Length: 266
Image (cartoon, rainbow, N blue to C red; front, side, top):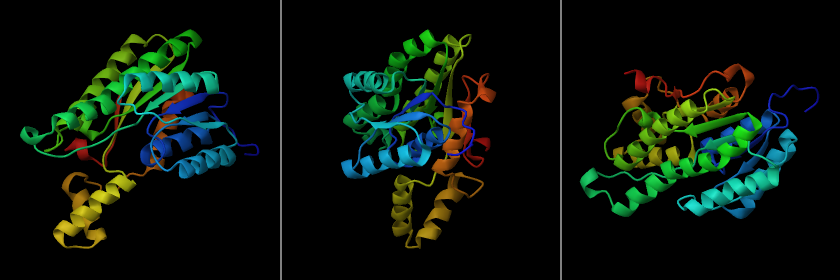
């Protein structure tokens, strides 16, 4: 890294749902600032190990990985405990894990509702409640929750996702207020359309349905909701996460920060 100044040297971060997409973008951005990181998520073990090694070698930090089904309370507790054991502490907690299912409310499968609420909302509560005591004891902490524009507005067919993301926004505000006098902040990043593998799959599906090219499918997807007609990138979200952990952001707490090309301004 040479003489490059890093603002998070000696800090540690646990990032859930970070083996691809937005979560990986945030993990890499924190590592670029000198932060040791623990990745979490599903995927091919060899690919995950390659990601872990790449982060360690590229940024000169320690990097770790632990899986776990975060729909289960015990797995959330074990993840935080493992992060504290392997890194010594959890200074920064980024909750990013999430799943989606789209269908009208009256047809929404109960098991899908339960799974989405468990992973997209309850896991955030469990990791926060487990990480907070250490942050409080050290007098410093940063909690970043990936909500969504759907934490601020609704869309048809997404009852469970929208309910969970609105819940994340509410949880974020409560945790921020409860720790407002400590140097512990809690904020929600609310992305709109971000160029990730999951979104690419939606683009391909839309293009096929409309009988158009992938480029036209992407334009159609963006034009429906996102006035900028530009995707955000995982790197954009990562840069915001790193800023929220910086000294300059010490008084930003309880905030919802859209990265949505004007979606929620409408």
